Length: 500
Image 1: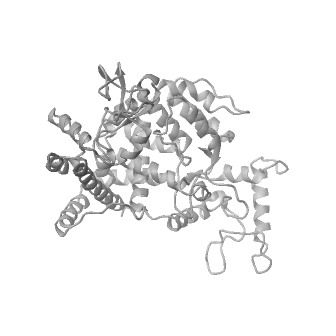
Image 2 (image 1 turned 60 degrees about the vertical axis):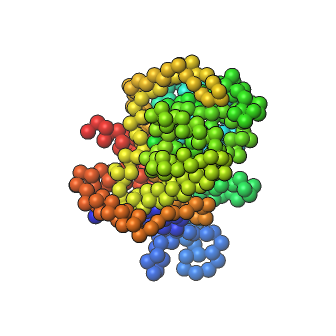
Image 3 (image 1 turned 135 degrees about the vertical axis):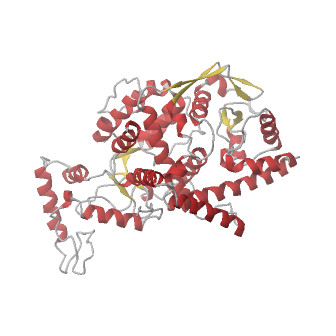
């Protein structure tokens, strides 16, 4: 029977990790592994003054010393024990005991120095989310998706440190390979570790809580809050319809163009302006390559609400045969948009669409908890990853983005496969975090009739052919691999599917 993915937080994910570590051969011979009652002795603090296990800390330190010598690590050099812990860790990833978030134990997350460098770039505005909990490889991929060759040119200076001079690489594939194999292992000063070393106090050699729960300063803008914002944004982007490659590329062109940024705001305010989805993707509108120009204050104030002007603009696009709403919002949009006569009615429709989106995300979480990954992946628009997109003569007309042509060409490298793998990984991780967040200002809409239809659909999925169930299991393994595999290993799995 296929194992269901765990969408629980904190302790459950951490317990699975503990079980994995204690059985792994890398930790064979660890002293006092189990207590007399059969429980795992994960912690071995140095301040135990009495009892049967008062010397466990010292015995484990001797174990780490012998392990270091086996690996050729100089035990007289600084940080020898943390180097040993990082080297023998079988996955280089662990869940946080507090919140369950899986993070890389290595120096792989942008700290304040790198974030300042990024903010200093003329094309990185406040509308480009920067998350201190985003893996550096994912961040670089996202930058490349939006800013193309320009960011590749700036990466050497962005990633430079006193001891590391990055090479001038011409492709995103080459950069990702260098970051994984050369940059992260050298522990650059502008990156932070996902987990701090704590050997021999902890059996695996690392603190039980990760970077995500290590800081609670600056209330209102904590890393947890920033991650919540980024997670929600990803859920909205990843689970709506649309050519996300084209939309991301166009948004990057707007962010990197000094001329376009100085376009006046739709509401008459002076620039700089940012790209705004006319129909908010947070309400289920299509992530499509057309934006309107709003200044920072107007964009922030709009949030996930529409005005009468937005509705009118979307109505005009619909009348031209353009799909503006994703499948799950389309019928609600179709049936209610003509009733909008003023901003107040536009706000009411926005609230209906918000609850509708929240209901669908809750349903997706339910499907994921039952392991129906193949079915869910059909909503991720993965086919767009296999194309490059270039725009010709991007300009502004009537506060909207315009271009003479959009050229799409098939990707000739493995990067498209990497993009698919990343989209699956991030989409399901964001979905998991989204459905587990409590106290949202939205409602799950349910009736006996709706529940009956859902159960009918679930029964159909449960009776799917063996080929689909096998694919479900493979995709489930890919998602669960976040706990046990490195990024290159995850990519290798996905590439093997492509070549079979």
